[in-house]
Amino acid sequence: MPAASAAPLPQTQPGPATPTPTVHFRHRAPTPTPAPFTLRDILLWCVLPVLIVLGLRLFVFGMYAIPSGSMENTIMPGDRVITTRLSPRPIALRRGDIVVFKDPANWLANEGAAHNSDRLIKRLIGLPGDTVECAGGGAPIVINGVPIDESAYLKPGVEPSHSAFSVTVSAGRLFVLGDNRANSADSRAHTNDGAQGLVPVGDVEGVAFMRYWPLNRVGWLSAHHDVFRAVPSRTPTS
Image 1 (cartoon, rainbow, N blue to C red):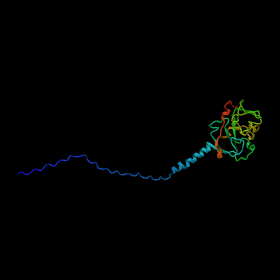
Image 2: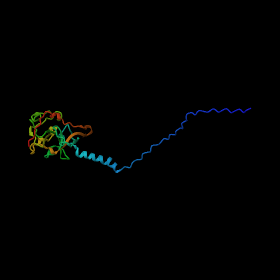
Image 3: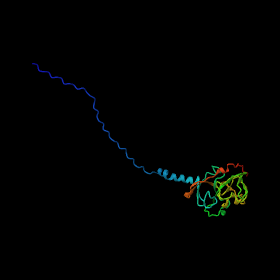
Image 4: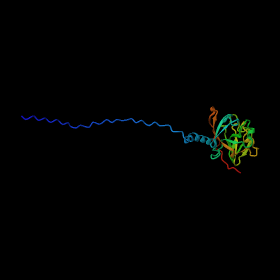
């Protein structure tokens, strides 16, 4: 009897390949190391800011202490103010500006306060070519025939000018008055000084725009340009 033949083994069908798991390794970012403080850093963070501040202080801003009461109540004795040195050049001066200027003819001798410098501060009333006048006794200041209302900045209870005067501002000069007219040796008090009490434009060091001390009086200073809006301009004569 023939031997029984072996039955063929069932063939398995190839299935999908099993993916080999991928091992992910977490890469740690390199820790930055502090860069050394170089000469460039010193120039950028130390020297440059100092130069900027010094440049602004010398060429853009001025700082002044006020010792007298000639500008009350706008500026009180002991106040400190900041000025812009951009006036009178390149920014033109305007009526109403509060200007700081060099003493033109020993005005400080009549200011009634101890001074550590030869600078004064007043309000600019007349520009070159203007005729500034007042009849005195409580009458208003008149500029080029137009009376102005100064109640916005005059010290309460103080007249525009107790004394009468009439001055035509010559070329290159300014007519200035204090806001406290009863205690201000301004252009009115020096009409016989050879220059009619007028201040050379070149002696103006800047226009005050802010009080920065004391802290309870920090604030902007107004020029009140609107007071002079109706005043016509005149060409100065040499």
